[in-house]
Length: 90
Image (tube, rainbow, N blue to C red; front, side, top):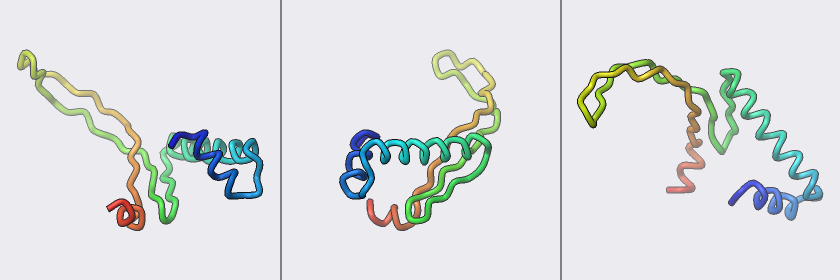
C-alpha cells in the first residue's frame, strides 16, 4: 500500500474528503519527520516508536583488498514496532 492508497482507504472510512484526508496524513508524516529530525522520540501506542539512533565511528576492513579503513559515524532512523503490532504480524 502506498500513501495514495492509504489516503483513499481512510477517506472511504471517514466523513472527510479525499483532499482533507491527504492533508491530514501529510501533516501527520511531517510532524513525525520533524520531531525525529530534532532528536525526539515519537511513540504511537499500539503501532510503534520512531527514533533517531547513531552508530559510532569504528575501524573496518575493505573486503576486496584487506585495507584497513575508518567507517564514519552515522545517524539513522529506527522504528520499533509495538508488542501489539508484533503479535499481529507473527
